[in-house]
Length: 350
Image (cartoon, rainbow, N blue to C red):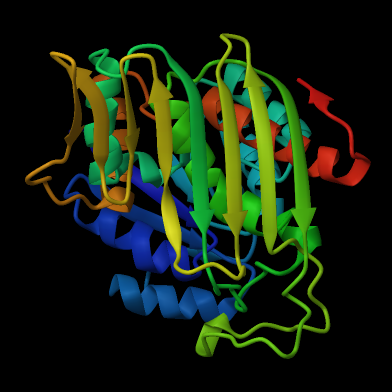
């Protein structure tokens, strides 16, 4: 692999907990600069890196002005900052790997795609569910034609009780939404990827905030306690999408709902077979016998680390970036349309 000088913008929990360990495990990568609006976060990250001398900045523009010969930057800020920061680095021909979702809105994502077109650099997005070992195994069956023509899919990311009380997850202005934009985007992207990313044509959706302001329900304590008086995002959301190729997809996600258990997975139905994940099962017919297929063993996976390794491997050898910006654009376009449909009560055409 080639050597890369990498900058980090937004050095909070996801950066320190996932991105930095993955980057430090790649010998060819040097973390050459860090940036955050919070000085304490910068100091904590220096300690985590074991490098008190790493250049640290309170503004990504200042980082750019210092011309540190960065090859790539990871954006781990809240959602509202993804688009402007990515566009600035792409304009400087610096590769961008941003946390999911690509942006808060379809319009913001469109600016990012335009910036990538004008740049010598590439843009990728951290939709790490694709690297879950069950999803990766299922993708092989789908691509081999074992499910045939897939005409229906479900994408589910449900927590019985899991409203994140830290950071800005409950801040509509900085996050763009609640469970759908945060957790639903994982399930939606993975389902789209599994079925080959067909073009969405219409979206309808419903959004609810039934439990987040309820002071009588339990929480999980710690960071999973939240400000109920100022809760202004959805805690349950559904969507229904029609695609150009005839596929239909149902999306369901929750931060809090009266359900038995958390569930994070997908369901696919095709004319030769079907599948569910968590756990992975494949349903089909052979020799006029209905069969259920389950894996005996799947190789362990490290989704965050694996997506980052693949990103730099692609940059190094000139192959296609695994998670493409236009795919992430479709994800946020659908989510944006779900929110619009929930507000207006109308189906949204894409």
